[in-house]
Length: 179
Image 1 (cartoon, one colour):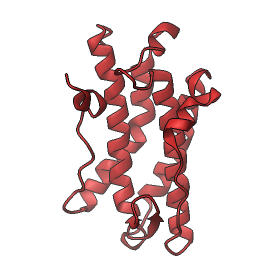
Image 2 (cartoon, rainbow, N blue to C red):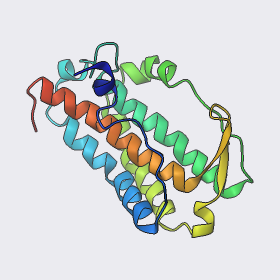
Image 3 (spheres, helix red, strand yellow):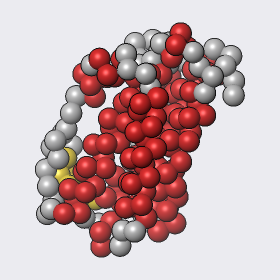
Image 4 (cartoon, rainbow, N blue to C red):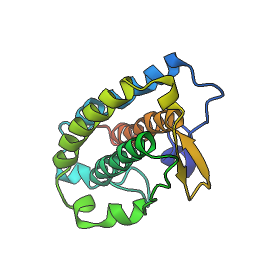
């Protein structure tokens, strides 16, 4: 497997050509399911397993799970900002630096798994009730230099959850820790 396949086992995010209500509902279901996927993926892994990076130079499983919590907290906040302000400029953050902080490297991952369950429940309850008009509301992403509608963010974060869970799953497969 080459570096690109290890880093992006499901491929890079591809912008959908259309955003149908059925696609959006499916992505919201994936966002809702993420905490349970993470539960299953980390079950029966010991401390040594959790410290193995999913690829050379990549994060270990603990860092990936903490990153999911960090990233999705930011996404939830961005959703609420877009719903309550007119195209607010969001604050990007240095994901790699966050992953190197104490809580991202050392703190047991069960704290972030618990956080993901609560966060995704709230986020899903909000997303499931958005109107077509609300799905079009935007926030401005200064790193991308463009406005992003909530419906696109939903697609991105459904992909993001699959992207990182597949990294953990591919590590489990390579090391013979099949589920």
